[in-house]
Picture 1: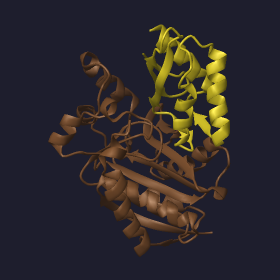
Picture 2 (picture 1 turned 180 degrees about the horizontal axis):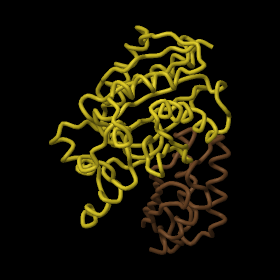
Picture 3 (picture 1 turned 180 degrees about the vertical axis):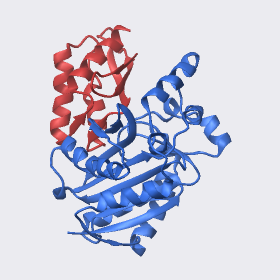
Length: 247
Length: 98
């Protein structure tokens, strides 16, 4: 099985989600190879899970003031602040390449991240349902969907993390306990740079090595059809109020 | 009417009910929303789950609510992760009880 590797590139939030869907459609039609894609977010963004209520998860005023985009994902899971300190990936392939059991398929793909971190000298473990932890602290969150016979899993690996900024953009249930929450999240979240003095580039290279280990792969780009479909999905769905405010 | 819970070993889930009362009959769930950071494959089965509780009398038994949700899931061939039909049914009742 030949995989396509699309190297790290920054896009806005709407385009990032649109590309994942356009590639999924193309893989479903058998027009594209199974794909591993790395990407970043410019401007910074908050993504929320498919089933979350936008107003409950993101501080809309602060996001607008800070120029932070907000997008609803087509996957479940929680709200995530995407800064330049993280690396996001997506894996898009026919379902048949992965275990049928959803948790097992999380475990398999998360295993690629765990292997990547081990290349950096960081020991981590899968914490079901969808997290990877280092000494009990979360370093990576992941979300998966399966449609039309295609599995899409995307997730983030923290290279650096700024919890204060994260909490200025995400809503907290009770402002009175915000400081306490920040302290508690700081105790529960970690990043590659907190574990070891490793540059973003070294981290990225390890992820590429970890994700492609044992696979035949070639570096590739989006096809023209995928690009134009992604632009369409970005405009019509992911940047639309109807989609983002649907809950 | 609202109940929010972090499911032990699972996800954060919120069940909201907007009740309706027609005539002298038992008050019913006019509409229901289930939100949170759980997973559901396929995602659009959420509408079938929510619709399955629509019109249920607010004093329905937990088993009946669970059965409706399970039926909706089966009809869509859907899988819930991080919350169970049982949890949602229990939260429906807690939301009603306030």
